Amino acid sequence: MTPIEIFRLVATEFSSMEDTTVSQWLELTSPLISKRVFGKLYDQALALLTAHRLKMAGYGDSSYGTVGDTLRIGSYSEGETSIGFTVNQATNLLVDAELTLTPYGLEYLSLRRLVVIPIRSAGEH
Image (tube, rainbow, N blue to C red):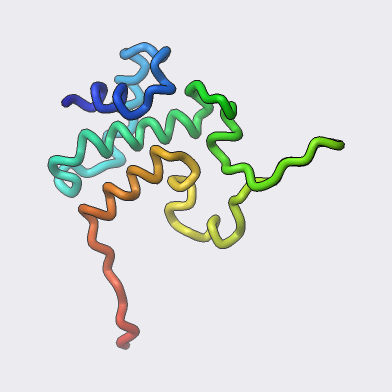
């Protein structure tokens, strides 16, 4: 499958977006992902990261609306309207915090964990 075919399969909320626009976003996103590192998962990673970036940019159809789907709503009150989001300081300190804000970003992180082995320090000096 091509990246645009994968994108259409996994990101159905963007079905009204023209293929030329999707292709341009795929092209903009492609330098951010290594073909060598992702190997056979490259096209899938590209489609997911592109969908994440589109969602963060405010595109897509959703029953929750753009903000409700991009930032996780933790609380809501009606009198004098108050909405709280579940992004806290600990989340903001994570390098990949933005990727956790959409389902596409979370799936991209899962794929990346399959192909990228983190380097861990054993505390030796």
